[in-house]
Image 1 (tube, rainbow, N blue to C red):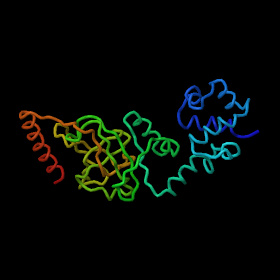
Image 2: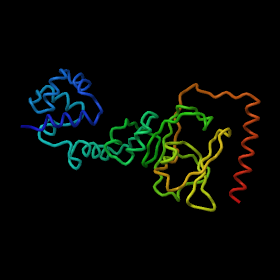
Image 3: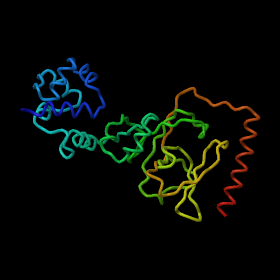
Image 4: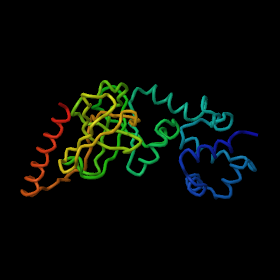
Length: 249
């Protein structure tokens, strides 16, 4: 017996599809898909051809290879194809996937199933994109997508540059980062909107850091300020700067 049924089940679960959703894509009944996955029946060749097109696999791979094998399986093949293409694919982490990212950032299967896109203006590097919400980084509007380049060495972090910071305590945030002069064990995270106070996090709490390279925002989205609000923000910012200078000295 071939491995087709086992592979169909594995591929469906990788995409997070129910049997009903996968059956619709294959143009068959859910009960028939169940029979295939439980190896009570062999998938028809026309069904396998649809699967082959969906996942960019050959019929031989579907029939004869165990795709759940992490060394020689579907995910390994996809990674090899990406590397061979020479095109840097950027995984996109939307707000709804933020909680899952904190648990699965080191899981290759989770990362490989994120949606991807490419940008021709980026230089070579390792990039990821994160959707941000809230007004703490105004004038960057809520809903913007920040494309960041991976920081492999924390000594490369530069004061006042913007970063996506992933930490166990704060989750995924977009902030300006200041390194403490007194201790290498703390970072100060600063919002561009001075209505928000800076705060500190411990270095050991940081899981990942991505230096912001591009901001992708919706067109015609503009934050409006009134005069009183601007005056209040300027005053607040001056107080924060004074406080930071005292801490740094």
